[in-house]
Amino acid sequence: MARIVVTGGAGVIGSHLTDVLLAQGHEVTVVDNLFTGAKRNMLHNRDNPGFEFIRHDVTEPLLVECDQVYHLACPASPVHYQYNPIKTIKTNVTGTINMLGVAKRTHARFLLASTSEVYGDPLQHPQVETYWGNVNPIGPRSCYDEGKRVAETLTVNYHEQGHVDTRIVRIFNTFGPRMLFNDGRVVSNFIVQALKGEDITVYGDGSQTRSFCYVDDLVAGITATMGKDGFMGPVNLGNPNEMTISELAKKVISLTGSKSKVVQKPLPKDDPTRRQPDISVAKRELGWAPKVDLEAGLKKTIADFDERLRRGETAR
Ligand code: NAD
Ligand code: UDP
Image: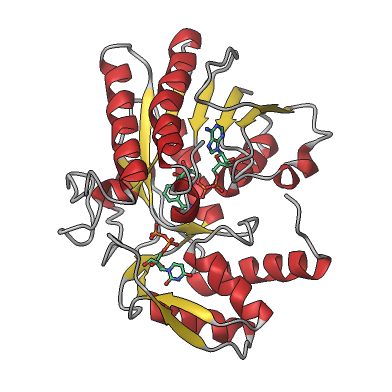
């Protein structure tokens, strides 16, 4: 049994991670400011004696005792991380320093949830961990992309200078139950629009690609990375199954049986053209690969959204 801190544990990936860690018999302290997370994502754990929630902003120092830190706190959707870009940078820089400080003081193992966005609009395809990326330092996505790049640098520096046992995972587009209705990312937008019979909003001509990973697979990859001795990463975690956004729209319409029609909206500035993880390192070092195919993952996510919409869920 380990004492584990999960920052961002009220969010999509963090709440599923918390469930897995509790089921394994660990004690979990979720640290979250509830910006894009929700209490309802943790309510089912309320009576578990191993579970604790601290409403806390990681940009402020925190004193906790623990054996492991999973540092996930950061809004992940472009809509939310661009809402207050300076705050996003503070979360990634000051927040990561604070949580690395916790790991250093308590000799805890530390895992940073980084992102495929460190590759920017990639000129190499698929993306391998040794690729340095193609990132605009002054664009609308920079607060997140550059913030995560500094977070990676800090993590490596705390390892080398501060002797913290660190890991970096680079997460590619991940989806699943519990995404906010207004999350703004493509999978949740399309599902909500399809279920409500609203227009499906494809940005640009829909030819840009992404590779979508189901949250359970991603969580398995994260825990495998934390569990492996002497492995720092960075390691790509994602599903290499690449598709265009237009194809995703068709898939969601067919799985929901929706009568929604597809409409085009302007493509956001600096929207990456292609993205696909090379997961050779994860396969070799962790013996990890995603198991849930897109259709199965979408079906589970659609069922979750459908149930929440029927229930009239509005509040967080
Ligand atoms: P999410 O928005 O659902 O969860 C993020 C959580 O962090 C939320 O609960 C939010 O309230 C919390 N948070 C944000 N700022 C905070 C702060 N200053 N202090 C404390 N808590 C704060 O997003 P997610 O999809 O679960 O992503 C989790 C992590 O994985 C993020 O770090 C994200 O950058 C990374 N990631 C996710 C994806 C993806 O496709 N889901 C891809 C790449 C990287
Ligand atoms: N996208 C879209 N319609 C939407 C939301 C997003 O066409 O309603 C596109 C977006 O422009 C991008 C892709 O879907 O090309 C993935 O967007 P998301 O915000 O989910 O993630 P990211 O761009 O960070 O990978």
